[in-house]
Image 1: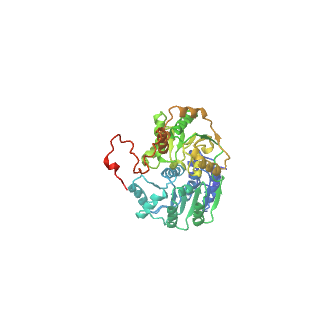
Image 2 (image 1 turned 120 degrees about the vertical axis):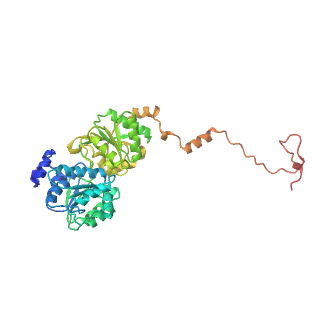
Image 3 (image 1 turned 30 degrees about the horizontal axis):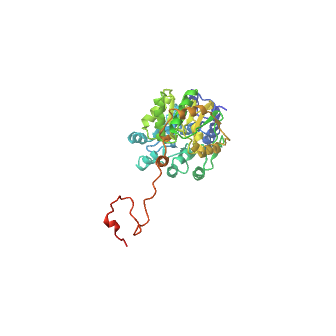
Amino acid sequence: MKFEDLGLDEKILKALTEAGYDTPTPIQAEAIPEALKGRDVLGIAQTGTGKTASFTIPLIHRLAQGRAKARMPRSVVLAPTRELAAQVSESFEAYGKYHKLTMALLIGGVSFADQDAKLARGVDVLIATPGRLIDHFERGKLLLSGVQVMVVDEADRMLDMGFIPDIEKIFNLTPFTRQTLFFSATMPPEIQRITDQFLSAPARVEVAKQSTTAENITQRVVHLPSGNDSLKRATLRKLINDTDVKNGIIFCNRKKNVDIVATSLQKHKLDARPIHGDLPQAYRTETLQKFRDGEIRLLIASDVAARGLDIPDVSHVFNFDVPVNAEDYVHRIGRTGRAGRSGHAYMLVCPSDDKAFAAVLKTTGLEKIEAVEMGDFFEGEQAGGGKSRNTRPSRKDSAEKKRDDQPPAKESRSRPRREKDEPVVGLGDHVPAFLLRDAS
């Protein structure tokens, strides 16, 4: 099947050809025709399968006719993160380059005034994170009564980030006659409840088993003998240096670790840069662009970058930490092996990660993941300079050692009461008279 077989507008087909696309992915081939019919669509597919084009293309086709009114967008696309929202806007620009559609991007870290100015002129497509959209609405700068199409992208990530109440509020502000396109990689119960409530007889498009990993990604795990942070960083560096890493994304569970790992790699002359939610938006945008352009080899990220980011041709993904949410493992390693390319994923597992690692295996349906043997390296690191704050003895151990180093405690000095005629011992030949008095 070709894109031209889907009945798309000639201008869209021209833009797709110039972008180098002529054959739709499985989810695009199934979702786009249903969306063009005006039906609600519930799309379920693992990351990297082309979900973004599954809703941007039919949305451009539908909005080709008509005109936006001031502060009343004709369509709304909700995304969980600024980066994903920005990527969606890039897709609209690429596929809609021959249409005169207006677009506004409402995300944090950008001036309210600039966004308000675009809304005042009227936009066909409004791409936003839930929080910033509600901020504009509550300030009276936005009306949602004219929305014809509502899109929710990466819905399960919305759930993880606590956006479900905001999504429900936004749905209730839009007309019940709207068309809804709802996309998610997984379908936990809370997401199922939302789709049952706000989608009307949707066409369900599911092209892969939920929470499965792509077969073209080689997965490996490194079992560490301890959770020593210095040892983990040394292991990561060895993997990078011993593996043919064209470029890679390194995922950490905490923002603090992102900065620490990035600094460590930079100290060892590796081209790395951090990205997480606490960094300024301009810095995050610049970092991603440099990574795409090949100016940065290693990107150290929190899960803000785990889903939806279309960074083509990433050769490796490293899980410095086992993800707390097992489903995040699927999305993390989905940054590599995109568009049919081969990819490689590594995960560092400490003894304390056994429960989280078991959850990853259960969620992905894998019986095991191939282990990388690094025994000699671990022995060398632990015997050599691989020391860190985590190797210091605990207070309890220090206290026990201190007690062991001390001489045995002296026997108690308490003595039974002296009898009346019993001589006094230990005071020399002279005994004070008051000690010889009868105490009874």
